[in-house]
Length: 130
Image (tube, rainbow, N blue to C red; front, top):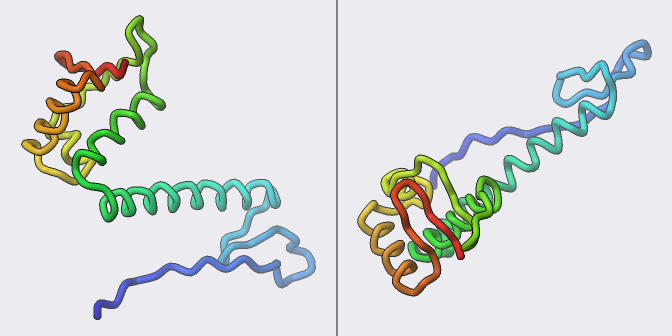
């Protein structure tokens, strides 16, 4: 059994009367609770994204992961075109393989299959989702 290093975040009130700023494990937030909650929100979003990435690797097969990544990219970086949404990123198949945790060959096979089914259109340097 491996030992995994863990970071524990504890919220506690300031000890001294003259210091009323919220604290997280010795880090003071002089501008008050708004900054503290922003830090907590950013950390929570980061943990959620990492948790989704690990779950994706554990519970989805390669075609499922390859299908999901262009959808995510289309929602965050896609441009509306006449035939759908186009992802214009300099994203090679090797880069996409790294994002989904698969080999380039498996990503290529999945993309070709999706294109043959009409689910995506692959062009040089872009993917279009109809």
